[in-house]
Image 1 (cartoon, helix red, strand yellow):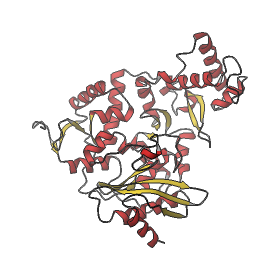
Image 2 (cartoon, one colour; image 1 turned 90 degrees about the vertical axis):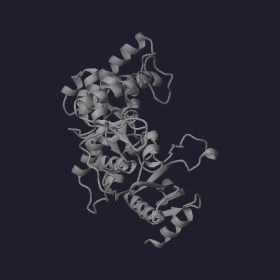
Image 3 (cartoon, rainbow, N blue to C red; image 1 turned 90 degrees about the horizontal axis):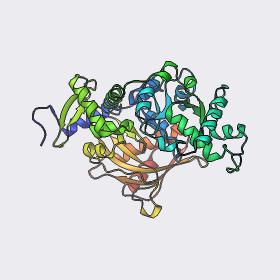
Image 4 (spheres, one colour; image 1 turned 30 degrees about the vertical axis):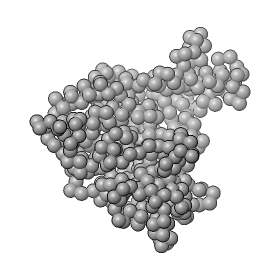
Length: 408
């Protein structure tokens, strides 16, 4: 039973707060998004997760499209690749673009030491780290293969060159990146990181030396996550930046005691949730969006299920014969309902957006097929594709195909 001593929100109110916090409650503006709008969206979300899968578009490009519509991806690239950077890559939810001021706070709680070179013998690791740092200090951002070549090895022959073996170099780079000694100056066209000294990446070199207290750092991260989520459980706050749940609960309690957050009950959920007071409750939600599998609205599946009754799993790593909905499935948000899910693929050679499968959710609004068709054409245009092709898989396919054929 909810605690009667704390304010109570209905599930409908909590859904609208969540959508408002994520910038998904309003229809998109018709004007072309500006650089400032792209920067504001990225900054408000705090995290744009990076992923190498490119069957549709790189994952970090999709959240701004979901919220702004057709924007120039070069605007987002400029934020993370040109000085002074408004976004930097670091470990957050996963590898992500984040506001630079979060870097020292994330570094305090970064726990991916298993990705680094700690398992290498010290007599191999330490000279290799020094050599890598010396190379990068020369001023040119370099990819891992470039670093290995300049160290005297050939990436095509991974066992060649003591100390510069491909696996050893990569592990050293990952270790230096996780420790925050080097950063990413951007990505190449083939999506390889361009490594550089962290002081060259951050817009303010003082951020590289900052060492906040662990509680202070976690309070900052918890408040930022709560702001981006609007109303949320402790587990979802912890999941946003992948901080420990128990310590995150303590941080949330500190923020409630300080009046930064408010403790609330949501519907008949037993768990206490947290409300960020800066988020305004809209009277209704009027937005529409296809959401990346790595969108921050769908990060934490338990919260997604609790708020929207939407059970969602990424099936990329599921064998094809066992997939229920497809390989790269995007939820379709219509107003305040997760109305459908579609498996999408960009056929760039053929200039087509392929809808490999389309499934309606139980109780989906009557206009789901019509609204989804419009959204698919908007997405296709943004991707530079000329047509939308709906394949005959899924219970929404017939209605969606009919609607697509009637659109110009």
